Structures are given as C-alpha cells and as structure tokens.
Length: 441
Image (cartoon, rainbow, N blue to C red; front, side, top):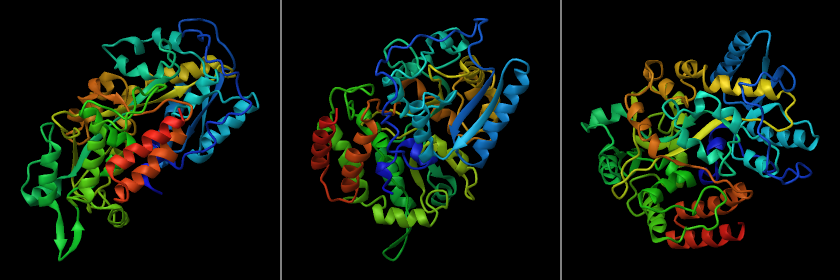
C-alpha cells in the first residue's frame, strides 16, 4: 500500500476502516453534551465493571495494557473492576459503529481521529469537569495547552489524554562512526542532512547498497506538512473544521518540491520502487538506510536493531523546525453503561500509572515528570530528551472534519503518490489537492 495513503494509526495498527465515519442511524447530530460527574463526586454512575476496548498493537504493548488492567483492579478492589478487549484495527471502528447503531455503545474505547465523527453526532461524553478536577489541569505537571485540539467545541474536552507521540530524525550511529561524521543534533539543517547523506550512501558500481537518507514520514501528509509549518504556512487554515485549504501557497509548493527533489532531481533518497526494495531488505532497522525522519512510535521496534541508533530533533527547514504531535487516550460514550468506572480507569492511567508507563517504554507518558524521569530516559536513545524538548511549540498532526479520511485517503494520498513517482509537478499536485479537497469541505 502506498505510504502516502496511511494515517499515523494505520502505520501502527492496520488498514483504515473505511466505514468508520458513516454512523448511519446513530446519534442526533447534536454535539452538545452534558458534562459527566467529576471524580470528586461520590455518585457512581453505571456498572462497577468496565470493559475497555483498544485495537491490538502487538504482543508487548497488548501485554502491558493487560498488566495495567490488573494493577487498576488491585488498586480499586471492591469499587471498580476492568477488563480489556482487543480488536484488529480494521475491525475496531466497524464494531464501534455497530454498537452505537444498536444503542449499546462500548463502555470506553481508545481514541483515534475517527472518534471525532462520534463527537459530531453528539455521542461522546463531555469530560471537561472530569479533567479540570484533577492534576491533568495543572500546567506545571502536564502540557495542558497541547490538549486544546480535543476541545472540539472550543471549551470542553472530549477525551482523557494519557500519552503523546511526535516525530524525530532517526539515524544509524554505526554508519556515522564508520564515515567519521558527527551525529545530528538540534542545529542540523536539511542542507546538512543532504551533505551527510551523500557521504553515508554506499554503492557498488551503479547499484546503491545503502542509502544515506530515506524520506521516511516526509512521505506522509502530516510529515510533509512539518516543512510547510517551518516555512510559515500549512496545508489548511486550521486543523479543527478547516474552512480553506492552502496547498497552492508558494511555501507549500516549495515544500512539496523539496521532498520530490530529494528522490528525483538530487536522488539523495530512494525513489518509490527503490524504497520498496530497501524496505524489503530491512530498511532503517535492517541497516539499509542511515537516516530517516519518522514517528516516535518506532522507538520500541528500533530497540531490536543490531546497529546502534539514536534520534535527533527534526532538522531546520528555512531556519526553523516545527514538530507534530498526537495525543493518545480515551473517549467515553454519553451512554456508557459504566460511566464512573470508565472515568476512573482513564484518569488512573493518565495520572498514577504514568510512572509505570515510562518504565514500560511502550508509550510516551503525557505527564511531564514521568516523561522526563530516569525510568523513561533509561534505555532510551541519548537524543530522546532533546527531541521531546520541542513539544511546547509542537502542532497537532491531525485533521478534524467529518470528511477527513476521505480527503486524506482519496485526495492527498493519490496526489502525493503521483508527486513522489515524478508523474505530477509540485504545482500540479498542489492544484489538484486544493481543488478536490475544497470540494469535500
């Protein structure tokens, strides 16, 4: 499948469920939701046993989820009990939709952008009272400003965040050592990356045996948009219910050209067919690529690499670097059969469980102290702390509108595929996306 078509969560868990946004027959279309009882309330609403739903993320992460449920049950013994069910990602949203249609929604489930459609239908609980009554509202303990994208109505939050992900430049330390090149850091520009990539590339005759650079997640819309951000622009005017796309802004077109040129005019990075071959041979994790920008969710898998590796902040583009971020956490239906228990589980994972999340190294904790703790940093690459230091100025890497999946998968994806295959010019790709995406607003 073409990487440009993939959402961040698709890269984690499987193919996007195309019917997840339909929700025919569900809800009233009213997005106004009454706030659920705050955790300071003595009122227990609903069942004391909560069933938690998430999509499967592989053996390690799934086992850590199960262990957290066991720990929650021990701490809340006699009051609440939780159990967790996993579904493949391509079945997850379909099942959620069916449960809503049957008026029997899940007690709670793990957030992804498809849940924004549930908010639009008035199906999600307003959790502002829940969050504001806890330490999650303390800006000295949590990156509170980064929660704002989940305040879909501009005031109230509709999810409980527990982890955060971002994007960095990953690099193979052994390759740098062999070439006698200093490691990337926050001062590196994309010009410097290209210079190093030329030195790191290894050829046998005309055949490239190792690429110094792969475009990585610059090949996905949210990765490429980081260059537009750095240049002072964006792909659309705002991530929440955009009113206009800005793809024809010259700064956006220049960003598209920059990535296309890496593969074609300069050929510093592999072209699509060459990328496929390098990936099949092991890609970055297999030592076939020296540098690659990518999401921080790759950290767990890279821990298994034979060669030493590290990470650095995204390189400077036109003098600036802006990293994307994404929140992970929980949403709770208004009609959850275990409202208080669901609230308790989500809050517990976002507060008391954060130290263990740091030690598990599967997700990056949302709590500042846990994210910066020795438990988190131990065993992590040296550049992790520097990469995370850019979070306060990060921008959300999502698009929230009812047609977001259609826009991204059917408009951005095909245009980027043609761009990266050198079958569309940057200007033509921008014009095509601008016209087709605007028609879907």
